Length: 388
Length: 64
Image 1 (spheres, rainbow over the protein chains, first blue to last red):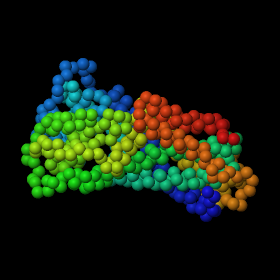
Image 2 (cartoon, rainbow over the protein chains, first blue to last red):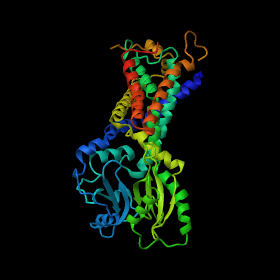
Image 3 (cartoon, rainbow over the protein chains, first blue to last red):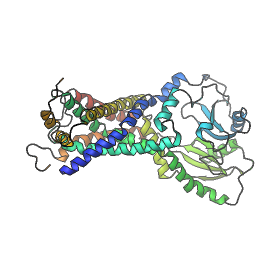
Image 4 (cartoon, rainbow over the protein chains, first blue to last red):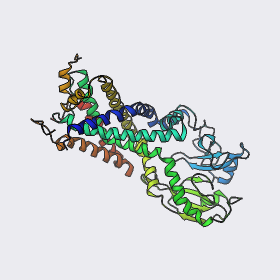
């Protein structure tokens, strides 16, 4: 466990420099993340579609719904249908091409009980959508997302090095020590270490899952090359279907074959989540765990025949499970409130770290290492600071 | 750190509390994912414990 002097010096410098690199971004993550924890609740209050409490229910024909969604955009095509997990809403995602990028698509909302179009503000506009775009990709699209993934890696190194230098600092101090009777610096040093080590588990999981989410595009591409390519292989010599079979029938076929699956998404042939020859019908399970792990059912878009139902590979499952562990949206409102308070605790660690760095920039490293190894005592004795 | 004398703590003594906290966090993070109801309650208690320890330590409590 014991580190050599050189070892401590190295780890101290790793902690210092990785922290300097990522602190500004982490403050951005924590501050934008705070309202984003309550994204759903805020949207519910401010932008939810007006829905009648009771309507005469009738089966929704998805083909008709698709035609309605395209009626205002001649020449456009359906890309996806998606079912809201909580409310009776179907989202139709349409675009100029079936593989159009996110910023060109339009999302139209329908009442899942009768297929009526809902009057609702666009999902991808407003303050919360802006905060999400800032939080997840710095408003820079995919390059921004991948860059933030890199920041996530630097952050995880900062966490690990922080734990390593925690040991020499705490040699003579009991766990949880916060000395308020010495100097302001010692108080904040203790606070930084105490909150940092106590929130270690949560912060590591949120950091790691955040990093995994930034890898969404690479993970999707691996899945396309791996499993989608395999499912498309039998169609190697076939032309993409010119006329698509009924999507309503495709979904009904899947529902009949997998009665306990819940249809959550339909991806059109040629879109990001399907082959050129299939509708991909995503099925969610009905337990808290399996409702996050959707499985693809493939329906031949020319014949309407179900060709394959399979589980997602481990790397896609990892991505799916990272979402709740990052957002904290899987244990009711109390968990969200705890998530928010832990987020504030993380902000305290960041700000105190920044304060500690700014307060000692011109001090030689030997002095700072002495401070570290004496549990904050030696350095304060050498350079007395006015106590509060 | 071998030259250090006096009542230095071992690595285990330094990290046993943090490990316990991390374990509580891990249980809390997984519990709500596995089930609803009681499982959610377990996750609120174990993750909420982190906040209680922060407040207690800030107000002067420590492990010794």
